[in-house]
Length: 327
Image (cartoon, rainbow, N blue to C red):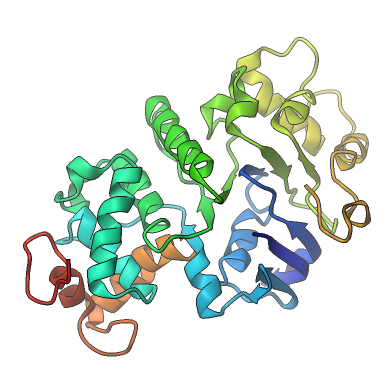
């Protein structure tokens, strides 16, 4: 299972965000860091086939981005999952499955399993509008699992969460990655998004750390390496709890006393040469459907096939056993 971006370029407002970008998503859990405006959301949007690159291609095991099979295999959790008033957590997740092309009965059953995997079973019947921020974050994770995604793309999923809730989210995500052949890419500007990165167990939680920069003109991430190698970039004597932020500053060349060009040259050492890997690059869909398309379609009463009401479709797969539910 390999998600590959080949020669991707994308401009926004006349400014180049990505240029001839090559990257193969590593195994396991990858943390994508970088300041605001570095292109993290753009990269995830292209990988989710929500954005079409101006140049280049994206594929998962040879399936091109945008195809039905690609979209079913790639789950997307945007920055901020918006609840749908009136829908329970299970209805919400089941509706996303339906948007992905699942039959209602299958989507309903899969929604129950997805909520169990993210520890939200006890809230399956709760209205999404009543879920706390941490519950919404886990709900977004469930929408990426309902259709058996093999790749999860997560944009600032822990933003605004307290430390304990960030720890719960990272533990659930790590469990999901460890369960089978699932790759996850979590993009954030905050090195503290995954608390484990500031502990001795960093390598047990995060497999790869990659970094993008705002003025990047590289054809690959500015940096890509293991969690331990990334943390080793922090200045000697840095407290472990401050190591992630210090390492990121060093890679970006913004650490006190560091020369930006020198730091960038050092960071490039952590990026693999695509040629050395046999041509491979170095080391906003399901959630967006829920937060944007689901809300839009439900609001105007149009389902993914152009017929019927999205609201009715979700209710028919609801916990009250309404007609039309195939359980």
